[in-house]
Structures are given as C-alpha cells and as structure tokens.
Length: 205
Image (spheres, one colour):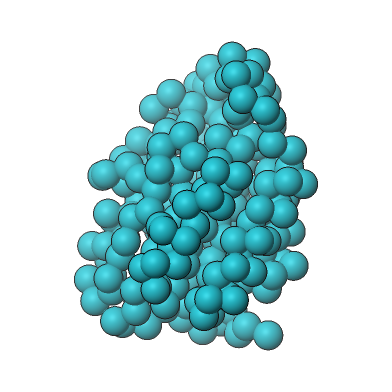
C-alpha cells in the first residue's frame, strides 16, 4: 500500500504530464509546476482535444518512451463533453469507459516499471455558457476518476474539491470565475490547479 502522507516525488525524478489541452497549455499548470520544481525534469505530453480513448493509442510514444519516474494523468474535459449537443460529431464516452481507460493506463505504466502514478480528478463542473449548455455532466467523470485512483491505489489530485472550495469563496457569483469560456482555465485557474497538485503531492513548503 502507498503511504499517502509522504512526498510523491523527489528531486531529480523525471515527470511526464499526460493529458489534453488543459495540460498542453503554455502558460499553464505544467509550466507553473516547472517553476516550483526546478530540480525535476518535466515533460509535457498534453494534446489538445484528446480523450482517454485516443490517448491510449499514443501512450507508448508520449509516456513509456520517455521512461519517466513519475506519471501524472489528467483527462476528463473532452471525455465528458464530446459526443453531446454541439459536440456530437464523435461517439460519446460513458463514465465507466473513462474509468476503465484510466485503469488501463495505470496498469500499462506499472507493467513498464513506472511506480509513481497520479490521477487528476476533473473540475467539479463546467462554468458559464458551457454549464448552461451541458449541465452538470462532469460530476459523473469526477466520480469515475476517483474510483480509478482507488481501485489502482494511486495518488490523486482533487481538482473537483479545489474548484468547489474556490467557488464558495465568491457567493452569488454567476458566469465564469476560473475559466475563460467555461472549460479552459484563466491564469488564476491554472495557478489553483498547480497549487492543488503541490498540496496533493505533499510538496508544499
């Protein structure tokens, strides 16, 4: 069993951040974490528009071939939205399939010697017009990601909780607070994400 009270990473370890456009963005949470972790080699393996299904196809090239010590997995935005409403040009990925894909990523990583793996829980909900359009669809995927982390006994980064706590600090707020259009974070949103990673990984000073 993992001792979740210990630091998740050590100086000198190579970290691959595997995700979608929220990971790929620069400036974004990965570039902020690079500033906070100057003694670690960080590789950004984010791809805009990616889902866990297509991410599995590039898993060897964008994760395993880098031979990292640490793997951070962060998906969910596209998995939950694509296939619905105006994004219905691709098949919808159910929460159970999302969870299964996260489990398989973790399993494949461990088979290839990656011992330190962290799964990031998506935002609790979309904001503003995206929430108005899509409703609270992300909640099911948050639960699925938490279940995957529990089943596979990995660290996890609870962005759902972090975003809800921040929203509660602004009672009466409507529209967008931490994102630019409902999904992609502002720089303040990315700072919150990076801070949540540091807290969840027990790296706070």
